[in-house]
Length: 296
Image (cartoon, rainbow, N blue to C red; front, side, top):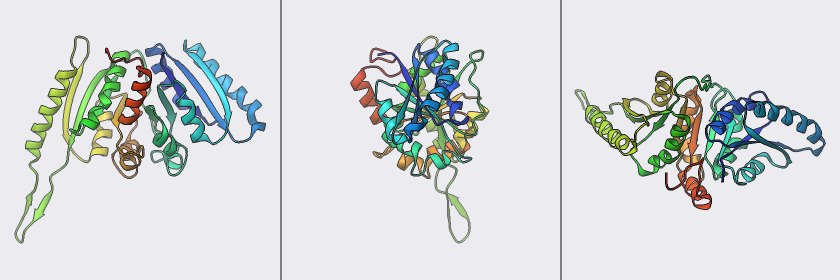
């Protein structure tokens, strides 16, 4: 099965910002795009088909195979169903000044993130990082020491190889926590020691991933995870942040008020959210995830 990337559009210029990023991924993986527009009123279909065909024509001129479809129904439900049809990723823009804004809470992106069985690449409304093929790509992958978080590396390494990208593994150590006595505060955690442990942990992961031609670097920093991750992505000129999401209900536990949402609100680069349980299901059913097979 070849790589197929689904790009949901809603007719706005903001939603179309996802198209160039999806196009780069499709070219790198020798895959194809499917543009989908969900409408509620069948009377809009003729006009919508013309608009979607115009976007598809631009993609085709970039040398990428592209299909498009207009469907009538409930947006999130139709997007999830379309993605399940042999697609390997969803690439979509987010709306609103803070992260997903009105698309997240009780609406389209929230439901897509919770229901999709493929990874979702989000292009923040504040995204200022343009992907160009005339400079080295860099993918930042935050890890927290858990096996669950490390499951994102399967897809991340595949993307890095396809894009000839450098991979930057990051672990954020929480700042000092203090307890207070009657006379003075004292730290409850040894930040210096934790940084040393983080450095060793990342070095071991990097060693396991290393092979000729693949560049894997590491950094451990002290800070509040969402702020530190977003700041590092800017400082290191990363093109993409890739991170695992937690929770049986999709990203609800991780995103709503937590690390991924905080990162998305601060990030000026695309954010790839991977549900490991969904990724395992996709790989089990198809044997392929963005061109990655078990033999790789």
